[in-house]
Length: 86
Image 1 (tube, rainbow, N blue to C red):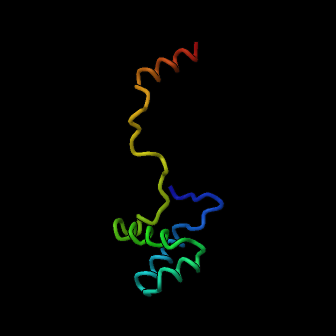
Image 2 (cartoon, helix red, strand yellow):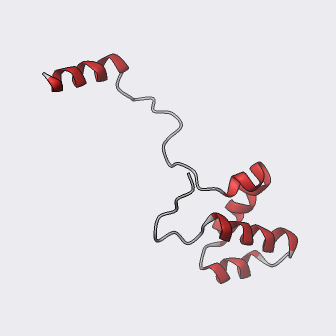
């Protein structure tokens, strides 16, 4: 998923620039954050994701949860869908 919303401050390209400035050019995180209008926390987040997953870590990810422990059982969902159609 690589479709940032219209008000996103960072895109994968900008994230790559952030990481490049932090790791290769060794610019201070505070300066990078100020340049891009983001928090220092966000700069550190993208650096960590880059270190963990490389370029792929800079891509936009789904915000859907990995698990839904209180999710309704599948058989109930199917029954409700069937009842709605009748």
